[in-house]
Length: 76
Ligand SMILES: [Zn+2]
Image 1 (tube, protein in one colour):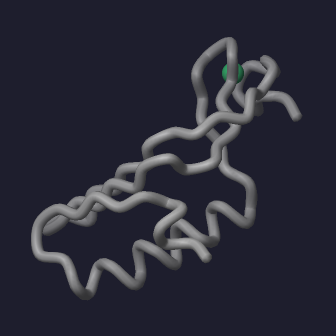
Image 2: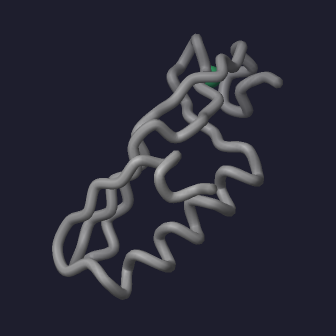
């Protein structure tokens, strides 16, 4: 796989995903990611992107301000 931004090489690493929903912020740590060694662009596999969406959807109802979770704790 190559970076869609610069065609650099992608490395499999973990990264921290953060989303600001307006009234609350969700931080998901240790997310399996493909990170470009050239420009630093982060991309996720379809499965990981789906899991992130599921985590966000399930958490946005329950958190009030900020939540920090580990990806591996939320994905069985
Ligand atoms: Zn790149």
